[in-house]
Amino acid sequence: MTRLTAEFWVHAYLARLRFQDIPAYVVAHGDDTAGAVLVKLSTLDGQAVAFQRSFDLMSGERKWVELSSGPEGHVDQAIQRQRGFDPDLWVIEVEDRQGRHLLGEEGLE
Image 1 (cartoon, rainbow, N blue to C red):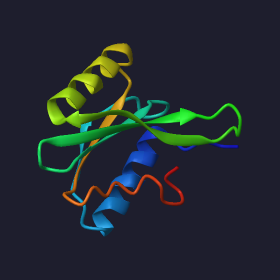
Image 2 (spheres, rainbow, N blue to C red):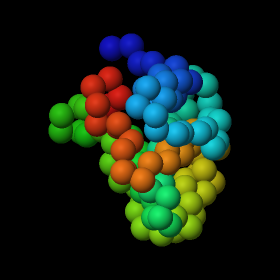
Image 3 (cartoon, rainbow, N blue to C red):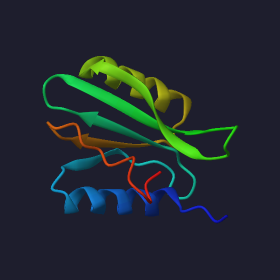
């Protein structure tokens, strides 16, 4: 199965968020072709959640899992650690008081 480039997926994700009037920003631009993507959801109340894609060995599917959650500073530190391991990492920040990130929608998994 052909995989989308990281850059293509990021642009599609940002467009989908814009259609729902959910602000989102590229905080770190990773490798255009094969960079991994982290999504940070800030609920604008000092709390945040960071999601990363994971490969499920049992089903063979890729799914979004929580990397870190809690005070926004704590989540930012977890993201910085990941960037230290992987300089090709994309980081997208989503800001939504309702906690919407759309990662579970069809086409974004």
